[in-house]
Image (cartoon, rainbow, N blue to C red; front, side, top):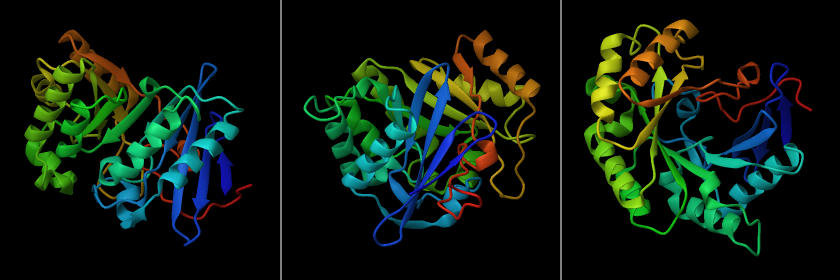
Length: 278
């Protein structure tokens, strides 16, 4: 295992190379004395989203339960011994490796093992509808985050290949069902691209999409990932977009991305070689 530490904010990125050479990365983020671990569920990713560096790698293989648990243990050590939350949001689509991810969740929350509360775990998905509906009717207490990316159906179809199998409308309906049956709010993750989906009209589409759903919207400024044609939204424009959502009664948060100087932010994980790693 190799590691790299951000000089900007102390974020730690861990590179794992497993027995067959398959790479994966985890990230430990710090905020106001709290530590959060971002774990990978696959080596590479089969979703191929047009803006994501991980997707450009293609799919290597699913990670085993033991490999996922090993990431957790390494992140806990890197955090100084305590983690406050865990999110399955690293490399890969968790719901395409759901059996191993689910086993990991059950192992981590086992009182005789790590005893880590499920309520402090979040699974992030691009929208694998059958799995969303499964957890809606399960006893799991985990949180759900859905990467809707953009509220425009044609735009999302162009950016997210998985949309061909699970269109935005079906993803939203599954998320609504999850909220209704679990009694929990769903997190919608919206990536702000400059000049693409950051206008007042785009905000109106998102407001309409989220209407009547117990949700919180995480706004994520696009992180440069070496993909042509995409640029991050200026902070002030992102704040204006957020204000429109809040005015419409939607709980909205502008995520402060960390670890960008070590390619540890959303969409930047590649499992590649590090320079100057220690």
